[in-house]
Image 1 (cartoon, rainbow, N blue to C red):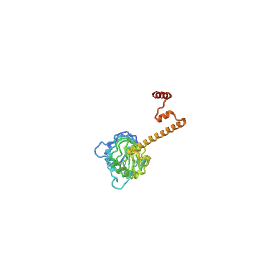
Image 2: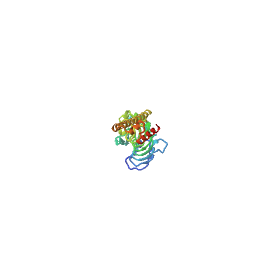
Image 3: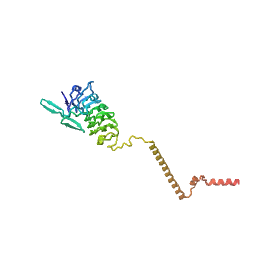
Image 4: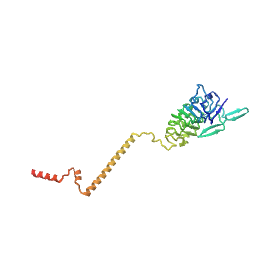
Length: 313
């Protein structure tokens, strides 16, 4: 029975081959780097791919939501310890000879060729497509996953906290999507995680701390202008914190004293200038009349006043 199907890096142009659902023993499905297009939604109600442990649809033109129904049927990936028995390499038997399957996986942004596929190894690569919508919570049930790559799609919504259940996860790449909201604190429990890439999204808030999160650098978070905290140089102390009433009163108090000091300074300058003029020119009549409260009188007005007094006497 067919266990491994790898047709990657060819020029195949087609829709997703739904007929593969009828292969109950299929464990590895690789369609990477072709020209597949259209939706990847299951067309059947019955379970499909129950033994699938490696799914690689990267670098195609698949669109629509992520294949939720398929993910909900991946029974082997839901076993955190893999199948019963000790781990062994998957082999293909031809008569008296047997050959180990080879597999190319993308890890840390580079392609690596695995010389053998252990029966406990499981990964999902759906990067570089046109998938949209939210990341389904059902992924959190795939507890045996070693790698999850959903990068370079059009995924929206929040990072589901259920990803914190993937305790065997070693690399997680959700970069170059449109994910929003905070990074779930539940991801701190991923103590096996050695590679994390959440860059170029719309994430906000404080970066979780503890365990493996203390080892990730700036590159894991770049392109998210709303993120703050270690390892970024952007502090979270003043982000999104409205000024308190005490701060507002303090600002008003400081503004009022600025006005008082400014007025006082202008008054001192004006007084010094007037004093200088008084001592320099004597006692100007206009200045005396301004500050003594008596209007100045011209010579003609003074003579008229004297005549009026003499007539009354």
